[in-house]
Image (cartoon, rainbow, N blue to C red; front, side, top):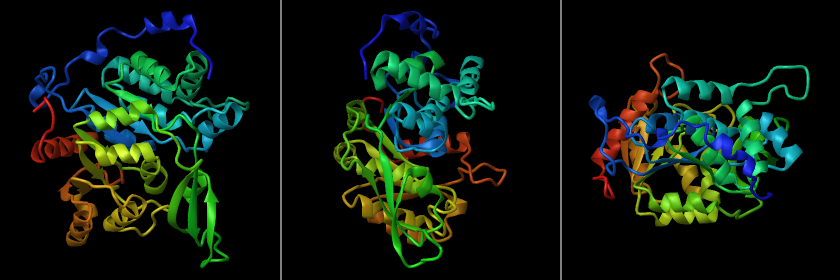
Length: 355
């Protein structure tokens, strides 16, 4: 990417001053004192990571989202193919999730999520995708550009890509072709993997062993808590474990680690998966990974004993809590998920100066 340009100084001054440094409100509406907030890093992609970030920004202002960069569908895929850039879509969603609940935050969240509808080439592109890519081209720095977008939005936290290299997700899938149900094929592309009707057996990244963004590694190593999931299991959660430097950081960090399970299996990708099977496939991809807590919605766990046994293989305790929206849709409720995370942070020990 090219060097910086001075033309962005005016844009930098547009964001309201001091928004990111405001103390986060604790329960009861009282602001937390500076230095008392946990440093939390959430890893994932798509709507799952957005759910976590929307919840976590309610309980800490020291929050970093680390996002997968293997998306190859929709607006992100088109920009990636045309310009050779990282797919910006999941990064955009994470930034929108970090927007505050005030008028400024919600207005910008709607703006960057807005998609154009036309009969021309711009059809389907999200405003935020175009903004992010424009700043990448202007600044020549992925992290600086995302930080600048976050400042403009008044984001309550930071968003980082897990790698600065556009990645391709590939999967070994049994029965991807319904005419050959016993055959195992290599399926290429995150969008295709996510929609396969076959049984995903494993995933890997191309290029293999991609470099991690240094700031993402540093955030994991410096965290008090790391949250992995929820999200598309093979295409948003597991890919973080396939970046060697990021996996090393997850293994070496002194932070406590929470795995947040999905509310229901996803059609295609994890069709028919039990909660414990999600853990089993995670362990196959990262056998040395240790966890401290596995969080699941109590209504989504028909067999707690089996989940407890699977969690023990990671050294983790199981926490069940109502985290789903009350309307019955398989989506997390931000307030309930925030309460569950807050309870876990309080019950399972705090590391660092925020105790």
